[in-house]
Image (cartoon, rainbow, N blue to C red; front, side, top):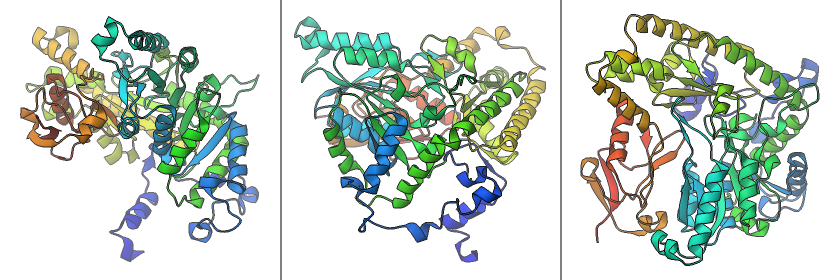
Length: 546
């Protein structure tokens, strides 16, 4: 192995052999399903040597793009397990499912109603299909520093406005609506932070207007397998498929024991044209689908439909104990079921551990002469990630300005969860000792309070100012200019934190003062801002003035 030590393979092997614990994707957490079994049952049940079973579409093994044999039967079994009309293996991850659903549920050049906190793949689908996008903005939960869910009443208001505009009155001229009404609704539930919208109510509204609801449930592949018996009332929310959604896309690899890049798409009901979605699926999926991936997906679903359901119950118990152990933290705060008290939060997925550092950041801003100094950054989400990584060998999923996310799954061990809880308790105690030596926020000067209130607003998704469509912006001639000179220009690039990949700026939108301040704030918090070609964030490509 010495010759591979500086290679990708070498680094992967070194990481797998280390004591770093993965609170990140994929959901198998570097463990095989066979680890759940006794020694007797485990014999021969592990995943085999990948080289020995890696094949192409040879005789007897079917073809994913024209399934008639074992793959067709396998996907039919999956559909029966999930309760869908049709289910499809996705070997290009949820991305190809999202692209296929968007293109398959709309007409080219048409219109879609889309949650602004959608993954960048949804924006790519809008570009490819040259769609006009109407945005739904999730409620911002200032208390927690995260975005909430989508309200059914907001969906209704947008669809009613669209229908009124379509009828050709003054509202139509004012809105500039052309080329037909909204043809589909797309939301994300659960979100990266575990926030679940009222999918049933949103589906009912969409169907009332005769259009389908697409749900990006990439982070909810585990939900259909929550243990639900009379003797056990699961605290996991129901899947979007159970709540009336027409197309649901799930990433198996995010929260279940399956390989990275494996996902499933489900179709249910009569509001979509299945053949059209399948046609686009044939375009966005690889023409050489991996049999390793498909075998792993089948194995994962079969396990979850059997022993996995009881493992979900034990997993839920472990998570409840984990959250209970952190209730006494004084500075750091962990998101819990109390978030469901917010109007837009219908339910919450307890597989997500969201640790807020907002109290510590407030303290740093209060005591620092320079409000954008290293002292402030060292209390933010990225700083907490670094401490957990370097001191405790715990690798998180993502860092935001004032919180971090640890992703868990039923494959997480009691030992792993205890390592995280012990680390957070120890860090909290150290922060508490430092903060108790000073006064709190209510004794700050008015100027500093205003600055902190402004920072709170910067954590909220900004309102887009679209000037031209996504596709039109991409097709126009571009020009590279410095960010400092880009105010009021039209962007030709995306700007987002990754993960999770939700744009704060998209092609065709005006670069506002708010956007520029937000990017500067992200940089001061040492976060990874992506999307633009210039990694230094000195310049951005804008639509050239004609």
